[in-house]
Amino acid sequence: MAQVKSKKGGVTMDMTAMCDVGFLLLTFFILTAKMKVPEPAKFDVPSSVSDTKLPDENIIRISISDKGAVFFTIAEQSVRRELIQEINNMYKLGLNDQQKHKFELTETFGVPLKELKYFLTISDEQRKEFKQKGILVDSTNNELKGWVRVAKTINPQARIAVKGDRTSDYSVFKAVIGSLQEMNLNKFSLITSLEAKPSGE
Amino acid sequence: MSEIVSSGDKGGKGSGKKRTKSSTRVDMTPMVDLAFLLITFFMLTTTLSKQQIMQLNMPDKNENKKDRPEVKESQALTLILGENDKVFWYTTKEGVPDFHETNFNPNGGIRQVLLDKNKHVQDLVVVIKAQDKSKYINVVDIIDEMHITKTERYALVEITKEDDQLVQKQLASDAAAETASN
Image 1 (cartoon, chains in turn orange, purple):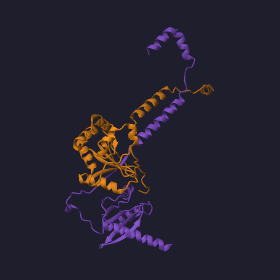
Image 2 (cartoon, chains in turn cyan, orange):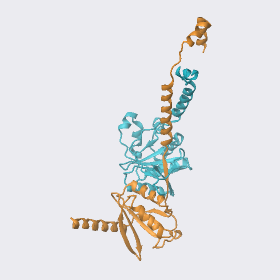
Image 3 (cartoon, helix red, strand yellow):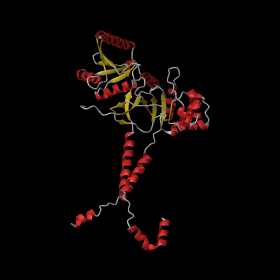
Image 4 (spheres, chains in turn cyan, yellow):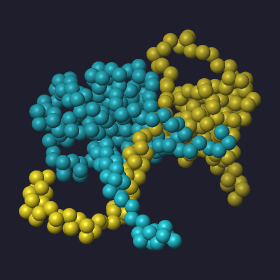
């Protein structure tokens, strides 16, 4: 009887410790969570049964948007700094330090070299409105090769990942793969989202 | 910390103790609930946002053609990816192609064809050719099918004019059959 009574009197547990742990973990996850950088175009990746994870580092990502524009992404800021330095010298773009710094802060871009200077001059608000046409991959004027070659010399361990929108035309993909093959790069990682394996396998 | 100590000094020890006794305990249950809800959310989003990759190895373009392995006619299966998610496949016998049309349907589509061929043909080699009108997802899907059906030897090569003509012929005969049935 005495036991029952004491229970009725309130089973208040001391939640402080639990609360502490909870918020500690919460802080950890919030801090480690990566902010999703808004992408300049739609990349809705197809799904596949492959379950290899995409490594975080040493990746040169080439994205193909639904409209067929080609974008270029390098995650490491230090590589981007060297990249713009090299590209600026190679193509004599005449960028100033401020524009180079702006490039450093741009993870993904897809503008022809001709428009690069303008793209790096405009403000962030203007950039949101600016329609990036994509890097040129024509056989006559293949700028993608230049970008990849320079990025590869800066970081020889970099692997090429291709991220294509599911509705993008195969012809663009063929052009991208073709120009990379001409540079003797024959291994690609296609970025996909996970799909369950069909049953019966 | 120092503030608390000084306030305790002012009020005296007795009153400080009394205040804590008169239940300043807050019910932490909703707070803990919320915290764990957020943890779950962040945990799931951080681990799930990691993307998967599919490895694709292309044949070396500059490689000497003589070094390439010969493929027997009976081993080869050619797939052509067309527009509107169509798949055409053919095997050749003495130079004459046996042409068929199918799709990506998981039951009875191209997967069935691949499973059948894998059963009957030893060392099957699949040659994948995509028309320019096909979509990127078709390419990923077909490589996916290779993984699912455990076809190990496949290559993505450029389409030839002959293949385009075969597809044209098939589509024309389809159209003719449709008008005949109407």
